[in-house]
Length: 306
Image (cartoon, rainbow, N blue to C red; front, side, top):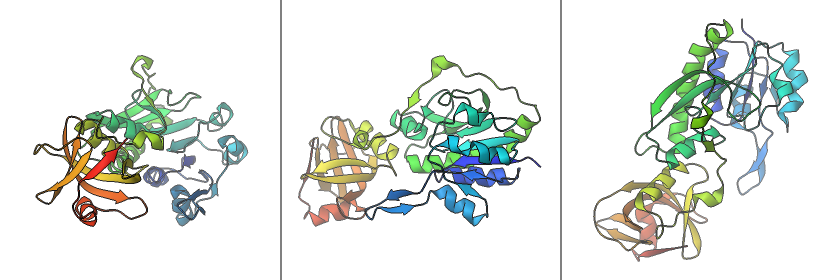
């Protein structure tokens, strides 16, 4: 049976690991170290560590992937599979498996190379994305392509929802592709670098929404793209307000940067139109319907600031 080591960290890595276990023996799982999260600052294990532990798989959590060269080599792997691991893999490590590393990447390469391909696709207003199975080289998602599968992006789909869907799609594609690759039945195709775009890691500052300057479409794209992390946010009365759900409307004229209640709907004026706020989260509180948030304000208009 094929022996494969696995490198992954995020929740979307879990379906890929589950798929790999159906076609290969997995003697080692490598993931990121536990990190402090939330207000408590307590160390939390990455999702892949939890899943691997439940399956009884050995787990390593190095600060740097290079530290796993010896452990990976001791497993005598035929191949290594990586999905949403979160680190570049050094050349010395790439040489360990007989057939190298194979990456399950959540875009149609060469578009959106990098850490945040799903967020960038939604934010750019792309109608379509996909999943790519590729050989890993020392570049950032620059290796030859083994297979890819396209997927339409839903008009109201969030980054979290799309990522979960692509993880399922990528898992199935891995099952179909990996045996053929190992058997030598696939010819890796080089990427066309002229079509490459960069999917840089998301910064919290990017998720700021200013409805005075931003158009309605830009507001809606930001709300979807930054859900669930870090959450699109705006400032109302000097406090942050996260915008979790919104939708397009074609009714009424509302002053840009002002939210009002009309016919039980919370309408927010944008630079060139109006959006309806569905779900928000005031600073220091939990998520709630936008209507409940406005009720707490006694239905007074809410003014968003820069």
